[in-house]
Length: 126
Length: 383
Image (cartoon, rainbow over all chains, first blue to last red; front, side, top):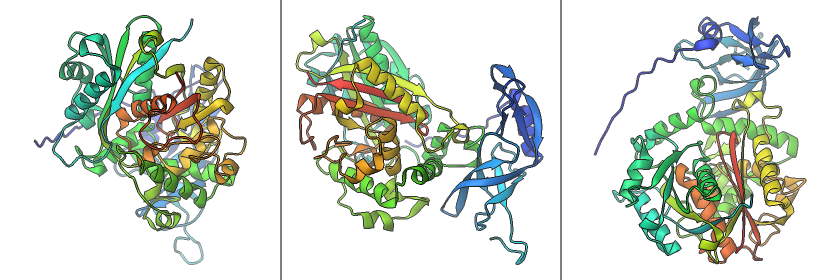
């Protein structure tokens, strides 16, 4: 027998709403723990058992590990000012730079996308 | 409290991609019936059922424990479903063992089942698997399991010195072990060159470094030792969760949650890693087997031990003689149940496939969900 299920979710973002609003606007909103000082991006709703404060990061990130396959690229990166790393999708996987900029997610989802730097001289991706 | 739980019997269906029109309910019934026969029991002897199935999206069936109790002629038993991603089957065994140890049930059937191959398109399964990680961060970038495991493997390779040849050796050896296993999905005769020539999925991982999506079911029956003479005993059941987000781990290449679960298991069993004589380790990817062996404490330098042949069938500690996930296959809910069954039968000297060169007294089972995010480790002893 054939069955098809189409599911259309609405996921309230709760305490992480500032983080997700930031992503929709292309801004990196990190959580800052007032107790231990840890800056997390992606943000956490709580740290050290307490609510966090919000802190805007520059949006620049350094690539630490990168994997490619099937025309897609993903990376483990550290955003400037963050104590944690983030897993990101690379918008321009043809580029080979080891740093990039947070990019607005045009699909409205919650993923973190990074556009790698382009070569200044040739005006092409490196 | 004395932990007195035995594997009274068990059975599994072949793990593969079903093309015969059979359903996951058929496989579950077959495994449950065969497990009862192996234990010399009737359905009426079972007083609790623990079902393992990773996702209702695979079966399109909520509340599967009640349904399978009914399907398997176990109406009236206590029933529950246990879920922990890739560790679901093993966690279900641990939950069933706790019931026996606590005296809540005399005989518990643990039944794992998953239609991971034939019921949905591979891309849909992949999309569901990507929700095994933090769905609000990693998952919504469209990142797949292979890419996350690849990022973790790259960190492991840099620190440990493991290279692509080490990964390929695992991929080849586990498939070779599977050739002696009549239930295996991928009993392949391949070489390292074949692995290197297979398509890149997410570098450094190629298709032959990845475990397959499989269909299948497995069941074990747990009881007190006195009710199961001549059968293997569970000496330790332990689990531990790690940070879900890879980026929040101190070292993305270390399976720290697995190491914690293993330490708890060794403490509970009162033995050290060096006393383990056979192991089934969660090799969702070739490199993950080496990362897992490191976390389980099997060698101070796991790469050197791998290169010295210590984990081969004739080695000091034979690993994944069933073929593991890479060779035997991975119908998620059934995977951990089958791992426990395999080690029990190895310790009882009645395993049908590849056996260790020297009979083992203790065996270890290791399973995880996510990237070693939720880890289950159990230790069994020969009868």
